Amino acid sequence: MAKAPDPRTLLCSVDGEIGPVGDARISIMDEGLLRGDGGFEVLKLYGGKPFALEDHLDRLQRSCEGIFLEWDRQSFEQEIATLLDANGQNDAALRLVLTRGGRRIAIIEDVATFEHGITLQTVTYQPSVVLTGLKTLSYEANMTATRIAQSRGAQEALLVVPGDKVLEAPTSTIFWAAADGVVRTPSLGTGILASITRDRITKLVPVEERDYDVGQALDATEAASEPVPGSVRPKQPSHSPEQSFGRSSFFCSSVPHCSIEPATSEVWTDTTVRADESPRPISSTISP
Image (tube, rainbow, N blue to C red; front, side, top):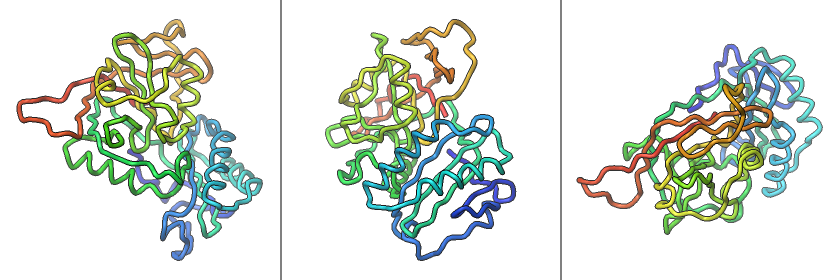
């Protein structure tokens, strides 16, 4: 989970006015606050440079068009550049927010940290048709799904539609590989978000994309959860940059270099489990 931004050291920009996060102000009547009415993006900074900024701004444009929210992209791009020039945090995240009240907000945040060895609990979820493919501030259903999973003893939710078709995690795209070595991920047609990092991975690695049920995911020998707000984690390859699957790590040969390392995880189903039954373990990865 992401740590709360340090208001003393991290900077933000509100309509081009740069200052400490703790000093930033918006109107309490902004419907971005009152109704979650707006769009947002979160991306990673590497050496102070934003990962796939243009792609994130393009998706933000699509989200704003989908919710009929007008914004000044050129001004926002200039404000983002000014904030990045003033930013002293090389390893950080950048959150971009547009509100119905007309605020253009860019925030430097601490990097989200993830531990290997998570447990997942399936939670039944139905995507909103009018918001399919849009990244909006209305994330309460996603956050509640995580809390439902945690209330059942897991660490994160795996969203499934009625009938147990796999979607994604509340803030992550999911990939997995079974004994046949094929890497799989749910198709965008299921209603999941078109993650920027998902797009990068599917261009680097052969991936099968279609509808899957929970049983097929439970057959995985390895899984990877790619947090939607994050990006591929750069890493200099420790050996030949050939892709290897099954029970091995994934090594992507293109720049930026990335690795997805195996770890132990469990997936618990949302159906009733008898006391004598145990969750089936799979190996999992979190790639921030």
